[in-house]
Image (cartoon, rainbow, N blue to C red; front, side, top):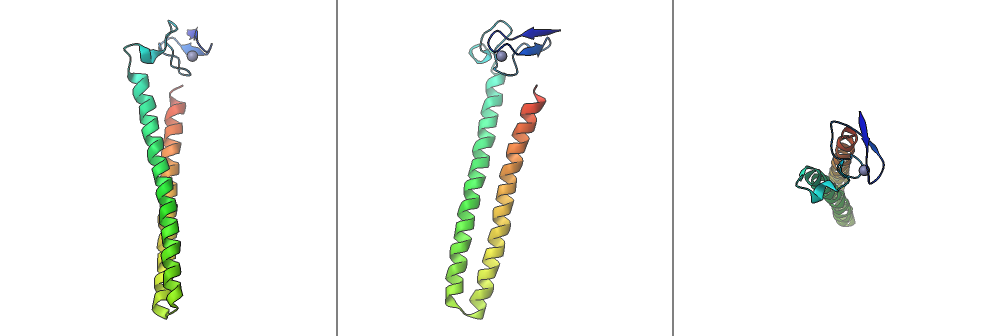
Length: 119
Ligand SMILES: [Zn+2]
């Protein structure tokens, strides 16, 4: 058995009493104005994960820019030793940036997977 949401007309299964799409209850009230905080917590968790993902993206940019800057400083010394330092900084920077971006992407994918499984 299914029921139709009074707010967005989406069909939901009978064993859930909150619309998966808009969060309204079967009675046509937003669930977060009721004493059901579950929906709210889920949204807050998503928001938190998205903020963390954004932070990791920002960190990736900062690390990337810093490693380019530091390697240029090393290259400007033009001694063999500072060349090696410069290359090391570039490689380490690239790996760190890729790691941070990958982690941010994984977080967003996890959020999307959890959203999809809630249907
Ligand atoms: Zn709805």
